[in-house]
Amino acid sequence: MHLIINTSSMVPIYEQIIAGIKRMIIEGELKNGDILPSVRTLSKELKISALTVKKAYDCLEEEGLTATVHGKGTYVRGASDEMLAEHRRFEIQNELEKTAKKAAQYGMTKEEVTELLQLIYEE
Image (cartoon, rainbow, N blue to C red; front, side):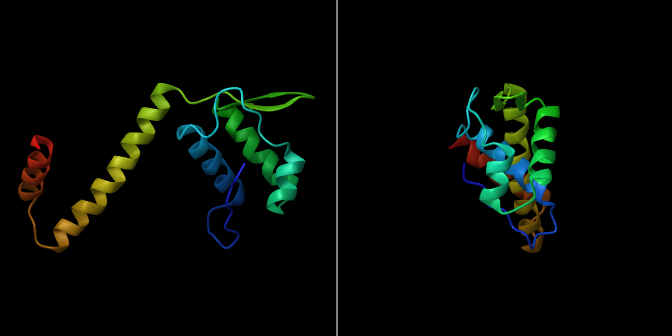
């Protein structure tokens, strides 16, 4: 598993782990039934505390994305259709917010932006 952790980020490390694993589930890199690295293995790989990894795994389990079988490991439960749809809406919303800010910087009105979006959909 390839997670990138930024130790100088203001985002706590456990939240970065959660976000990385969620991204891998949503993008299909991790599938239902896949086993995650053990807490010790991931902590050594990332050079962080095992307690930090455990906290991230516990949060993922609370969200229903993983299930832990004692003595066997932590398994991916997969993403629901609702979760995938919510993630996609969130991504589109972020992009539209950036576009709206840029349009405002260029002096465009909401109506002009709406008209452009309608033209794009007609193509």
